[in-house]
Image 1 (cartoon, rainbow, N blue to C red):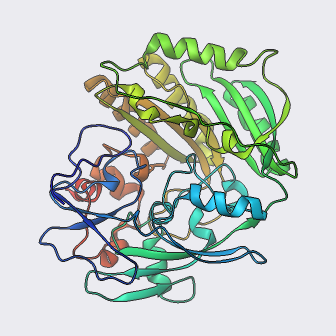
Image 2: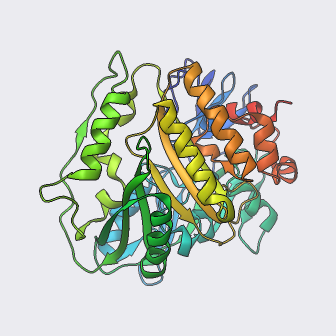
Length: 432
């Protein structure tokens, strides 16, 4: 199918591919093409890691079948195009939950593995790849490898966080975690200043399974709300269908004035009576607040937006995070849903996995062109000085030198890249 119109979630206007191809089922051979290939799941990566300009995208959503589910052990086998939303619909009523989930449930299993996504419980559970028991990897030469921590373990490590470049993951086996109900008991606590955040977050990670903070990135003194949570045994009706952004406005709706107004309202009194100290909610609004707004990425207008997500080691976290927030506040640019959390010491299984023990800050920025890119250069310098790195799944402009410096596993990884596979991201960061 020529004339692809696929895009990344950031809507930055890049061409996605010269053609789209489809894998009809997991037993099929890869389509024959003269161009490079890249698996494409549900397009929720923000930048060009899911795009292949000049090449072909291999549509994976057709591989959307469940193969086996053991309701006693919580072991699930499914095809790689299955969405996390589909898995949750199947398993939550049966008393199981994803062991790790990112901030949207509309990502494919293959995409979650290829980006080794992480969630609000990294301090206890590690990344998504730590709960993958195995998968099948289809290469362009027609070979199929069963990969697990004990079988083809080197290919297992290369493909988890491998950005879809080692071949096509056709199916995967996941270990789920048991729950008693579909609700989350949440404890909210406002904070002012990073010292207070780190203090209450440390306690929250000891006492709760999940912890994440919203932070006002434009405030002179950083302030925010820490939301710690645990699975509860209460069963709550799912939220009704959310709203949808029907079209892209001619200008971004996110600007300095709207950000200041939103942040003040969110920190102050989002509900009558202010922030409730404790509440029990359905799991969806806690884990996936933006999923309630269909096509929310359109609010940034026709120029799209960038997400900048970094992680810095804990020893440098207080200083580096403060410097980044100060630079963002001084620029007048920022995000209405800025996320601050810490990542635990669990080793991620992938050669190119993003998580490291430290603090991660994720923010969305309307694409304002040169001023936005100049801000990113300043943030890059802070992250590199702190021996941190950026998240490839969210990246759209990281210099190649920074990638190669901060992901030392890239040299070993190169030998696992399928010779027929490539992406816009990979070509960009491999440029000298």
